[in-house]
Amino acid sequence: MLQARSFLPPCPQGAAQTPLPTIPITVVPHRRLRHYLVGSPDDTQHAIDRLHLLGYLERISWSHAIAIPANGLIIRPDGGDILRYSQRDRL
Image 1: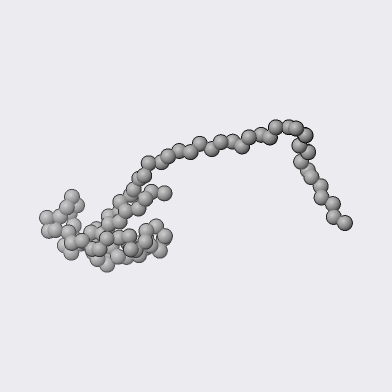
Image 2 (image 1 turned 135 degrees about the horizontal axis):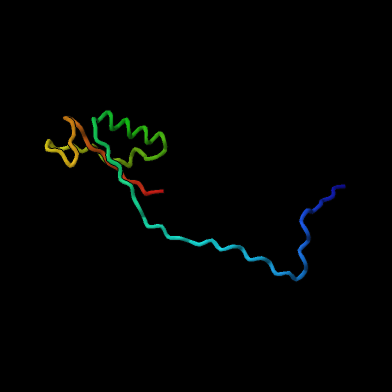
């Protein structure tokens, strides 16, 4: 025959139950991170593959290669460099 023991004191009859604590809900504004890769086609693809393997960004979330004009952007590329970008919601 099995016997079950309780190590907690019995609840008194008619006692009010303690209300559960309330958890405040905060609204976090939507924020997004933008990632830019500038480099050779092979180097940018390697970085994209590594970020995918780490589970950080999917390969399909990246743009196609964008040629950087000779006069550059705000950054100064080396000859033959391309630009790839992606964006991700912050966790």
